[in-house]
Structures are given as structure tokens and as C-alpha cells.
Image (tube, rainbow, N blue to C red; front, side, top):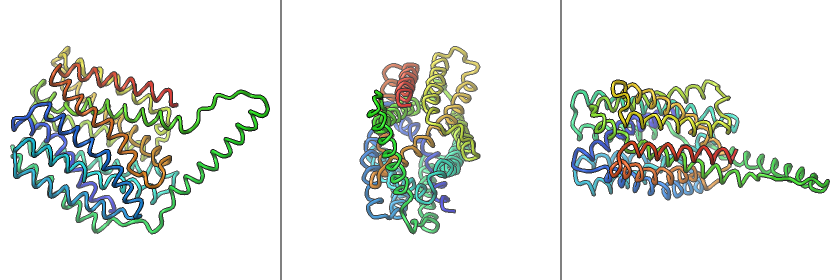
Length: 397
């Protein structure tokens, strides 16, 4: 019951994620407008994530920030229905991104504190699974509303109402944990382990052995670079993707929604497999394999953009999106659980900060490349970025 509001919020996000870029183009905008809007919003989410994470951890209160996020989104989405001025919409979208982040760090902390460290991966997978189902449901609503030609105001009002209902349900069912100590225990365990390793190293040095030691901090830095690069590649690929399907492949809006439903279904399967106990998927060595897998899948989209197999374009794109969603689910749980383990208190927003930095750059780069050079070059840039993430993770591991 705790996550019912989050499910409705994700339904709104699923409906909105495909609609917004198509809407901006429909009211006279360009791919550059889409890229600038997304990039500004994601850049604002970086300090927002840090600020909200710091505030909630400092006050040991998490529910108020979740409520603030959902209620403010409901209000801003209603304001979207009152204007078609692109510059004003960009400003509202940026403000919405800043306030949207108010629920992300508190949600991560709630999961980390409610469950023990051994349960984190499964707990995060459970949360992501049920909210990904909500995301999928939102996209299915988008398919329905597109088929029956609902106008833009109706879609925006639906997103606003869903967020308001998310606020009401969270008001009823979300509560702060009585005690905040699980992450502190993890820090103590890691400190003891680090002291033990230092003692072992010192004893070996005194015995005359030369050691080339990869310290945890160095590895953590490489993981950060890898996560940022992976997010960069993801956003280069996905920011212009709805417009690739609608413009380049000339697909109807309902079909575009259906393709992203397939992508979300891949994510649902990935989270389900993790939640079902597929611990083989949750090894840090899996990270570089996922990056390479996504590199290959993105390369296949170049063939779709070049129309080498025009008869099978939609089927190939659907298969690629499904596998991309499956791979991302595994990556997301691995990266999130790792960060919650190494993250000090007061830094609960650091995960979203690092991911957001890569996403912000990728949003603008992806849209700019698509507008100036075409979608094939955009997919090539995304593929090479995934390859760079593979190299970084390989070094870290």
C-alpha cells in the first residue's frame, strides 16, 4: 500500500514522457526546443537532487518532500493547459523537474532504511517493478487516448489528476521510519572491513611484498564516471526517439506509444527477474556487459534509421526497445544499490546528481545531432557512448 501513490505518479510520467516531445513539435517547436527543454530540466535536477537529499536526511523527515513533489506536479501540469507558448512551457517543465526530484532521494532512503542491506537489491527491484507497471499502464492510456483522438488538454489534465491522486494516497499510506540506522550500520561494517584490509596490506608490505592496490575510493570514482557516461548514452538515444518514430518512420502517435509500452514491458520483466531471485544478474561485473549489450542494440537502430530492412523496421525497433528496457532494469538496480551502500548520510541525492549530469548533456546532444545531422548519427553517438561506458566499467571492475 505504501507505493500506491508512486504507481499513479509513474502512470502520469509514462503518459507524459512520449506526449511532451510530440506536443512541442505539434505547437511549432523543433528538435532543438525539445533538447533545450529536456537539458535545462535535467541540469536543474542535479542541484535539486542534492538539495532535497540533504534536507530530508538532515531533518530525518521524508514524507513531506514526497507530498510536496506530487502536489506541485499536479499544479504545474494544470498550468500547462493554460498556454501554448513554447518558452513558457520550457520554464514550467524546468520548474516541474526541480520539484519532481523532491520525492526521489526520500524514496531511496525510505527503502534503504526499511530493509536490511541484504534485502536492498530485492527491495529496490520490487519498488521498480511495481512502478514500472504503472509506467506501462500510463503508456497504454496514451495508446487509448491517441486512438480515440483525445486533445492535448485532456492528456495534460489526466496527468495532473493522476499526480493529485498520488498526493492523496501518499498522504494516507506513506510514513517515516521510526528509527534511521540501517545505512549507518552499513558504514560501520565497511569501516571495519577497510581497517581489516589495511592491516593485511601493512603486514604484507612489512614482509617484503610489493602490492598494486586498487583502493575503494578509486573504484568508486570510476563507477561514477561509468554511471554518468551510461546515462549520457541513454539520453542521447531516448530524447529524440519518439520523434524518430513519428517523423522518420511516419508512425501514428498510438503506435509510438505502443513501441514505448514494449520498452517498458522489457523493464517490467527485468525487475521481475531480479525480484524473483536472479542474483546472478546482480554482480558488479554485469555492468560492463550491460553497457556492451546496449552498444550493440543501439547500433542495430542505425540499420532501422538507414532503412536497410524497411519491411521489418517496426518489428526490429520493437525487439530492440524491449531488450533495451530489460537491460536498463538490471543496470538501474545494480547502480542504485551500490550507491546507497557507499553514500554517506546527507548525500542521499548524490545518485540522482551523477545520473542527472549525464542525462542533461545527453538530452541536448541527442536532439542537436538529430536536428543537424540526422537520426543515424544520433544513434551512432549513443552507441559509441555506451562503448565508452563499457571501457570505464571494465577498468573499475
